[in-house]
Image (cartoon, rainbow, N blue to C red; front, side, top):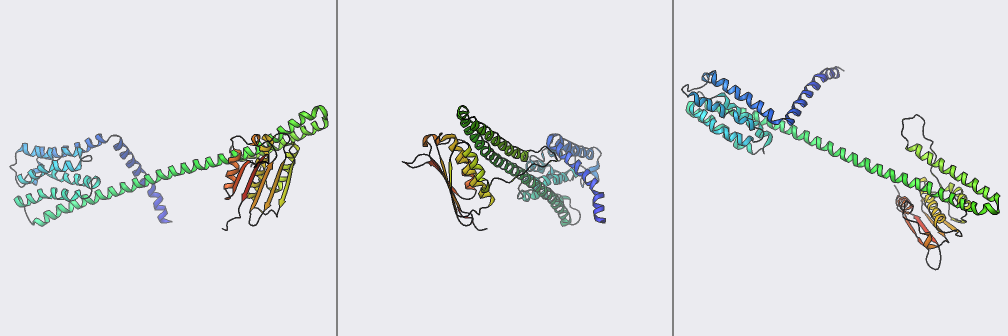
Length: 413
């Protein structure tokens, strides 16, 4: 608990520092030249103050260096810092002659230490092999100074310089590693976000296809039944008013069933924040086939059914069989003509295997369904269980249309 309390107390300060750091980096990205000018201006000012105030004389072994030369060396070792981030290697090469002149004349200006800042940017931005020649370039003036004006052990002065180089390099590599790690995390987050969006789009497309398939099955079948009933009622109105009234009752019943199914589907899709749960009912199954066939027969299509074996299918396979039969009969109602009949042959096997054949006796040319969601929907449902679906005119001399569905046995898990 104590550590957690300390972390909570430290969080506001840490967040404040991180917020300032983010703002500084954002400002730098927006105005890089302004930031470079500010940094270079600071060090140029410091070098000129050292020159004007004569502070360089406190450490210089040669006090007879001309003032104009000290000014030139001060500017030569500080002004190039403006390009330190964009061209660090070129900047170090530009500073090298001034650093050598600084060591040779004995001025030993403190501005020569600004080369360490350039070495830091080389470690940060250039290939690491560039550090070898950068180290040699910055060490050469130190060796010249030790050879001409050395005081004390030469290895101490060279060692001190190399230690400073190592520190600058380590800081540059550390910052570089952090930048690379952050960039990798940002790239990974960006790719995950793109992948998430793609998965969402695929899921939405699959859901739209499923909804379109369900609505096609519901609306297409029921409207076909209603159309058949309306046509039959129109012919019966003049000769048998009782049969016309029965047709109207059947139309009303079928319409209410279609509305109820659509309402349940739309209730599931609705997401309006209401607390009333959607009314959920099971999807159609083989036990609902009799009701489906009764509606088709009422619409004027005689249907004969043959069943072999005992049905023992999972709910998903039952829905596929139901929808395929529903779509086949709907197409017969739409396209087969007024005198057509239909026959359904169901054969159940072991482990969920089932074969369904739906044939009709209509005109084979007229029975072909137009391009739409019907046949693609049946094939999509069949493909879910590795089955096959054949749909086409019956072979000569038979007339009509044939839909053949086969679902193989369920594969073991």
